[in-house]
Image (cartoon, rainbow, N blue to C red; front, side, top):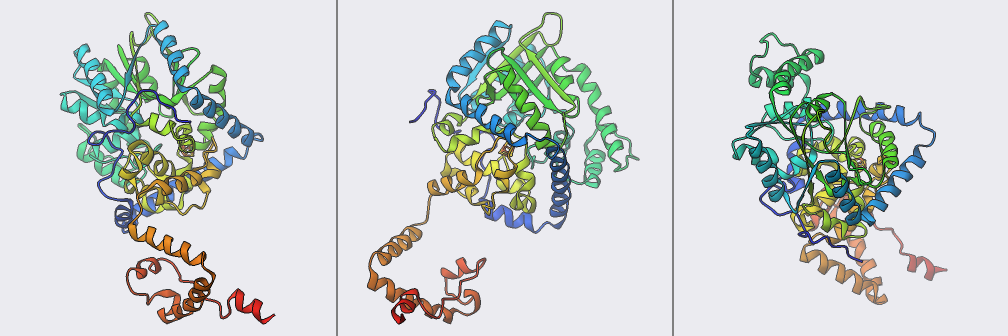
Length: 475
Ligand code: SF4
């Protein structure tokens, strides 16, 4: 069965950040040459993994919670159109305005027009993967509107004219000495004697942002969850910058992927137990902000929700692939992935790095536009074990590999192998001929091209001295 919401099939090219400039293997090779990057990543992912493992170990019903999270998400995806309409009605009834964006370009246009209508030339932002996905900052800047990131790691990325490399810790590829250099270079009015002590760096960011919080009238946020039955939106964060952005301005614009909707308030309770332990390794995240439309005289008086498709309907239409829409962006799969730990997030090209990026980005863009990503994995399965909503990422990787364009030579080789296996005499001859592979030297390193490419990173197995048929015939 295929599901259609009347939206375009995939995210359009030329806008947003779902496609890299080069395939994963080329970008990964360059990243692997950066020893400092690998040290930074190893230190950060090991720390988060250890913390997260300890607090997950405290929960006796963790597996049941994971199963509950998966079931809620599967149910929500199965009746997504109905839940989105319910959400729209509830948000509108509470005084908010809902906008539907078919793709990144439409979402950027809606947000830009909403900001323009307020007369503001600056917005403050809560960390949001959806706005990074659509390239909202660039769109706002092109319209003469200054976006200010208020999450510390996002601020580091923005001031460093850099790109995020992790879902939860966008500046994970930077160590504190590098962050100090960025602040000294880019932060207006920073103390020239700033040290790289983490509290000193955080204090410098706080001083820099305070004026923004107090003087900016429009904020743009993402949302971790949206509750269809009440129209409530929720943002989960650690620094309190989100709480400031969500409560201080006159106008609040939330850009949210349509897959973030969940049916009921009770369902939220499951995810608020899963998310902090799997992501930051905390029992409870420090700030959970929830708002339902407009409360007269309290908080933003103009509340907008932009529901973003940008390829999600295409993902939903794939019965296997739609699991990727269950993701709650905890980043646990990144922190356990041996490939991510060595290459970092930039190698994936898309704003969604790591195992979830390897299955989500190709589906949002169409597999042909991110054809190398499903291969950016050893299929070890660590991501599946770590995922708090049990997304079977290895299954999705294999599913997408089958859809990726394959070289004609591969198809010819497979057809030849199938023909050989179908003809016993030919198969026996091929087995005898396999012994000639010994001529290619130890581990196949002496094979001629193009076979040498296969053997460059794999050992060619030594053929047995006797085939099964010969062994059988002897008896
Ligand atoms: S796929 Fe699972 S582990 Fe990875 S970010 Fe999403 S929810 Fe977390």
